[in-house]
Image (tube, rainbow, N blue to C red):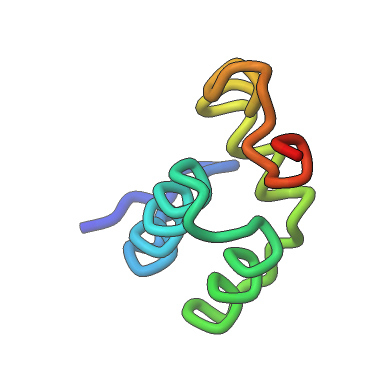
Length: 79
């Protein structure tokens, strides 16, 4: 039985699984923030803009430069 607690939102399992999936893909740089946001909305019906997802990832995993080092992986920087 779920107890109702003032100010508490019950977690939605499908949304948590979808969020973890896009977190993993974005952190591994297999998916862009924009594509991940679109997939999350398609899969759950909930909107999350790319900047909101970035803020969430930075808070949970640290800024991108700290996670991956300061050198950009962009092909333009290799020329």
